[in-house]
Image (cartoon, rainbow, N blue to C red):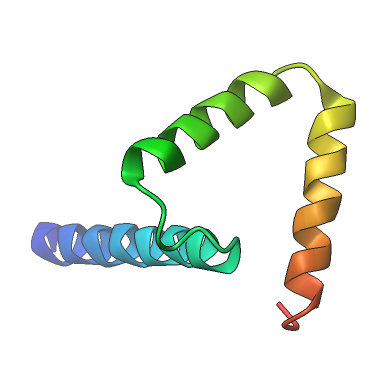
Length: 71
């Protein structure tokens, strides 16, 4: 039973990582260096902390991008 739970957890983790990688591709950043991508994400995280207007603005941009492909 524990082995099944571990396998299920690993599958879920793998799926999540694949989906997150898909976001990088969708954003047009597939060929950027990893250090740049990490820097962008760290900077964005710092910018949105406590800034609900910026969080909403960025969420709207993302929702619009998802709307283009029906997700």
